[in-house]
Length: 74
Image 1: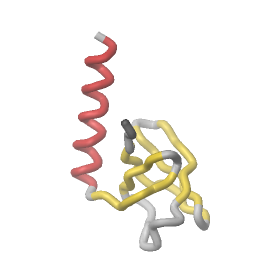
Image 2: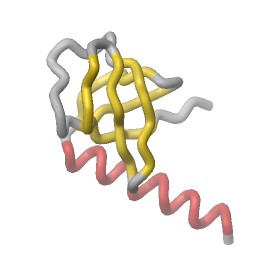
Image 3: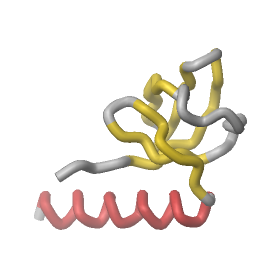
């Protein structure tokens, strides 16, 4: 099973960007997204941004991931 994680883009440098989720920052590749801009949300898998997401969808996905994580710890 593969898991994509939504990140908010806070910095873009050519084909690389910095994405952030809950204070955690990650360097990612953005070669596939030509229209990307700061504050966009993207779905990331294996270090690559695969698609631009709507903010509400990204937040819903993050909430679901956190719920699963919390349930797994209990």
